[in-house]
Length: 151
Image (cartoon, rainbow, N blue to C red; front, side):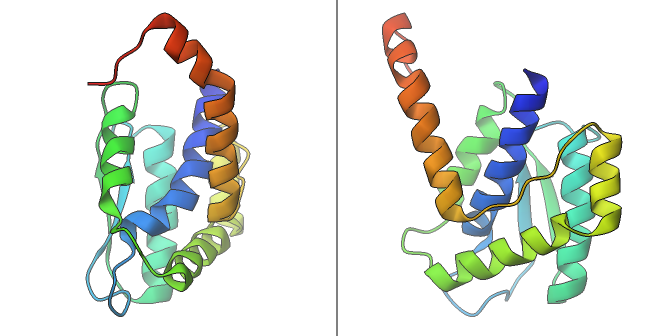
């Protein structure tokens, strides 16, 4: 179960992250913020820092890893979902997604992830949308049946 959660974090992070970082004007014109919904020092934090360093080298802009742990990662995921302005240009989202995918494919990142027992996966923002829809279709009824009310 933990592996599944980490796998989803990486797919989510590397597909949603560009939205969270994108700006409506020329990009990047300020530090890039990576929101990690886990505590510092955990596997996702380590990987985010490795990938952040590579993105920083390529784009020449500082990358800040912002850990927002708590509520089974919902605090960080909620912040990420609210970070991207509606209407973020499609090309910016895809450019950042490409940079993240490129960083994930680097041998040192692959090695670090495998050391943590993770299998890195890359994808597109559209892939992430399909994953979310699939999970919603799969678990939406269960959430409704148990009467869960988001706060």
